[in-house]
Length: 477
Ligand SMILES: [Zn+2]
Image (cartoon, rainbow, N blue to C red):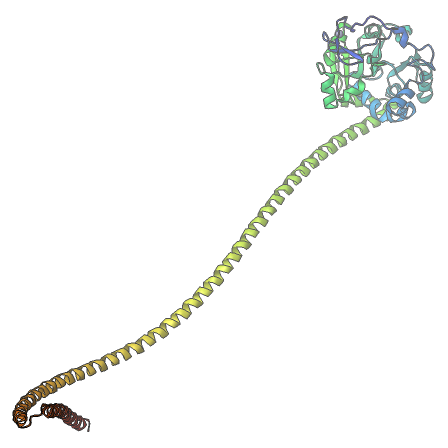
């Protein structure tokens, strides 16, 4: 059976958030869309009812959480110690504490070992029995409203992961408030809804808070502002938020009517030291503090290590880049060296060629020198020959002129002789009538003249050559 939907703050116009939840824009609380009636969450049948003795078995089965038996051990050194540490900041033993939803009863036991007058409460008789058997602690059974606790007698009402399960949080907490002394406080752990954040944003970030969207049991999911408003309306105007053990989806807070009186770790430690019964939890708290310090140190070391690893990666990348650059430079250097060697070989070749040419030049110069000398010799000889030829030419000219003169003289002589012959011929012709005989005679004469001429010139030349030869011989000897 469900009831008319409204936020704990009274707002009935709720916006949509998800399939299971509506969002109250007035106070920033997520409200389960199917709100059970108050009597529906009470345990009538411990075997079958939702919050009956098998509630934790179901959580274990559905969400893979450890069983309540396992948690009765593991929670002690973890969340119970964390909660105790938070409580000691606001209340020191002996103080009266009631824990609603005490489950296995471990936190109640730890508070009692520390000197608090602590009592648990659960709606499942089976779970109450389990807590009593496990830790031998006093546990009340049933809703808090049905208990006979005198008003204003409690110092603390603690609800660890319980507030979100209440179908009527205002009614239940108003009743609890009536049980608290004027300076009494609520000590709360509940999921934290980051106000204004949409389901899409949570899903895109894989927000851990998504695990808290269990609409069948988490009926009101508060934000910091809505939980502060909630307690303010109850008259608990003073709200302090404390570090939650699972801060990624939970918040822890203390609410009081009056300004808080707080205690330091040393003050709390001194109080615990003064009581025999609380020595063991003091030792546990000391261990817990030491563990937290070590944890913080370990986290710092991890961060530093990660930082160094990042630095190392960056450095490696830089070294790789430099190696690549060096490789490139080496390659270029090798190329240059190779071209330099080629250049050297070429230079050597050129040098050898130049030497060869120089040698050739020297040889050529020597040859030219020899030839120059030879040319000079030839020139000299040519000049000599020219001079000798000139002399010969002059002499030949003289011979020519001499021979011409002699020829002229002979011609004159011949002409005279011819005239004489012609005269005698004519006389003969006259004498001899035969013209033919005269012509034959004349022809013979001509031949004779020519023969004479040739003999004369030949004799002359022979004589001249003999003269010259005899002269040359005389000069040579
Ligand atoms: Zn609201």
